Amino acid sequence: MRTLIKDAASKAGEEVELKGWVDSRRDHGKLIFIDIRDRSGKIQAVALPNHKEIHEICGFLRPEGVIKATGKINLRPENMINKNEANGTVELEITAIEVLSAAKDIPFESDAEINIDTYLDYLPYTLRREKARAVFKTQSVIARSFRNFFSGEEFVEIQAPKLIGDDAEGGANSFDVGYFGHTAHLAQSPQFYKQIMVGVFERVFTIGNVYRAEKHSTTRHLNEYTSMDIEMGFIKDHSDIMAMENSFLKSLEETLRKECAGEFELLEAEIPVVPDRIPAMTLREAQSLITKETGNDCTAEPDLEPEHERWLCAYAKEKLGSDFIFITGFPTSKRPFYTYRDEKDPAYTKGFDLLFRGVEITTGSQRIHDYDDLVSSIREKGLDPEKFAFYLQAFKYGMPPHGGFGMGLERLTQKMFNLPNVKEAALFPRDINRIDRLLSTD
Ligand code: AMO
Image (cartoon, rainbow, N blue to C red; front, side, top):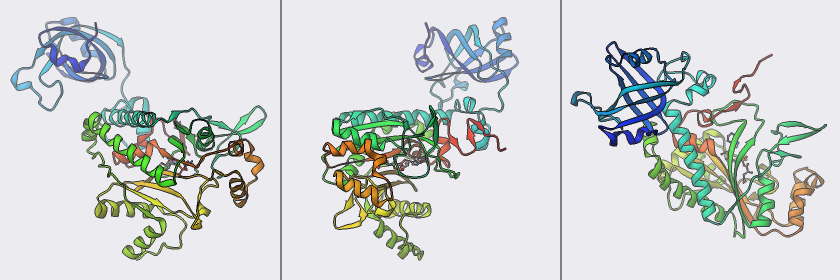
């Protein structure tokens, strides 16, 4: 029966069968050392010269080959103990070995310094690296925390379609798809469907892929990303949504401390401390502050530039002791038609962005729930309400005051670990030049 490597240290003196990958091999002539890796950890195995056949097989093994190794767990001699490793006090003395799958030559050593293009060219291999595994294991914990937290708050998980008739966000950045002689689009967000489902369940969430035909290449844009979305009914205003997101982030912090401390240590990153109340300021307040402190007048701009986001995050960290900051009160002209307007000043919306360690990770808002107001808002944006007739039915038949947010899973993961590029936080990133392989340039 297979023993998982994490359980090997407690089996000193026992015979075990391990299955895994050859993480590395060190050939010392008489002794051949093999680090075996499985999903639970790593252990050193040794092939002694008196086991001739095993010694020979181990001599040919290449890194990443898959093996079944049987043998005895021995305590290491005192001078061989490595206190920094989980299994540093033991090693497997191999008495039988079977190669389940031989590996060809690896393109470079697993700890070689490589640039991002090489990393992306060899993803099936580079994703096996310790750091990449730590990033994506944590990403899975983040997605699970999101699911658990919102399920616990009585949100129903929904699956939103990815093939849609018209683009939900009203922008130009949607991908066209040939659809039985028609043109369909890849969904840029589950926006319309999550709103429609508020009419059904009051509270819904979804985690799914969305598509943005961004033609530029930056360190924060992907053409396909994972959006974690919620939508909830019977809110007072957008501050209820911000409070809900704040609570989620607090529960996420707790889970990461419990489950991912080792991953953060490996990547030399800090788990952010989430305040009970994340600081918030309006766009106008933020712009006056930036203008006053940097001398760079941005008060006439309708949105924040990336450099402003970075500056505000540095300010929030230094002066307000928070890695997060909410920015509210964006102008109506810059927000999608479904965004609720501030009754006191309709040129501004009841929406927000959440910035984290220099980048926007969330957009959210209260939505317009009155049918006539929504139709007017569509018209004011120069769009044709007829094109939105399907979605508008939800509002014809009664919708509560509601709102929600969308959060990019990859950006959140990127910033958790302070990775330089969001592509390092997407398993198989798509960008303008690449779908797995570089796209041909002719
Ligand atoms: P928005 O378009 O601002 O809002 O997107 C929400 C969040 O999604 C992430 N994001 C991206 N991540 C990687 N690559 C991209 N190209 C990219 N574009 C966006 C960011 C961003 O904050 N329907 C609204 C949400 C809502 O109001 O509920 C929406 O999609 O983290």
